[in-house]
Image 1 (tube, rainbow, N blue to C red):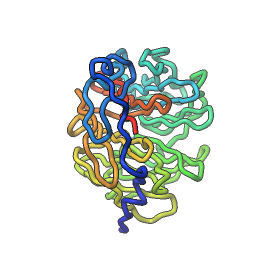
Image 2 (tube, rainbow, N blue to C red):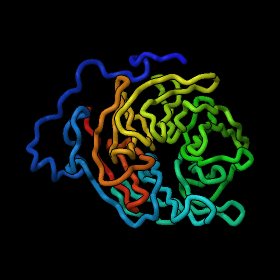
Image 3 (cartoon, helix red, strand yellow):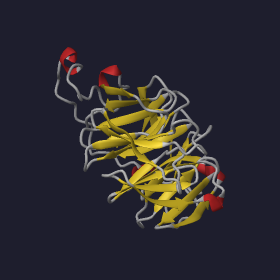
Image 4 (cartoon, one colour):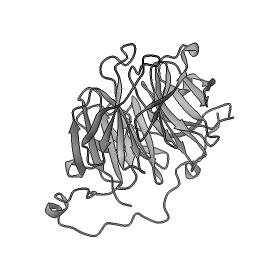
Length: 308
């Protein structure tokens, strides 16, 4: 297995991060959306913008910059077999606009939606048996890609590759699947996957970054067509879930220590200490915020991220 240099994998900005203009803390703490501190400083509660409730086992968040809304996937009970999962439509401020905006059909029930990804006007969501496609504006169910023939363990997160295909992690088995149109194939099965939970495309390194579940603290990358995996970073924490690229950095949710970590230059550190175990995060690219779902707490928190 080949180790890739950290300079290639996590490109840093030239020079040191510029400090934000000084602002008295009492004023800054009361300005909604103000990002306190820097990336090297652990954030405190003054960076929390909202705490939204009213969900039913929220597992994943995906931000839609075009509509300026979040989509939140809800287990609503068991994540498999009960057919009552749903996806909520939520404002950028954390207000639930439509609690059961997307649901399954009698032919393709939605059991417990998890990770999501938007391609054109379709929101794709991973579920127990495969991928569901919904119209991101109307909420209508458009498609279902059945992966049951692979006997998946726990389909979890989705990301799009440079080839236009969707790639899906299986946390119940150390696998990656490729979905192109209505066709699905198994493209990787390797114990070094962690097994994989979150997945995101990292253009700087030219590969998918994979968040390892269970005890591993090693993050690996894989590019379609490659036979092996590359080590890209290590981080404290563990049982990593959602993973997202933010500029030259990577954010990852750690359930072991109930924290959000930032990966930079091949190493991770805690950025936010949380009150529960975070799942699949979503990033508001307009405002520089991260939405963090907590399955067990039926809550989604929105935090402002530091300024560069």
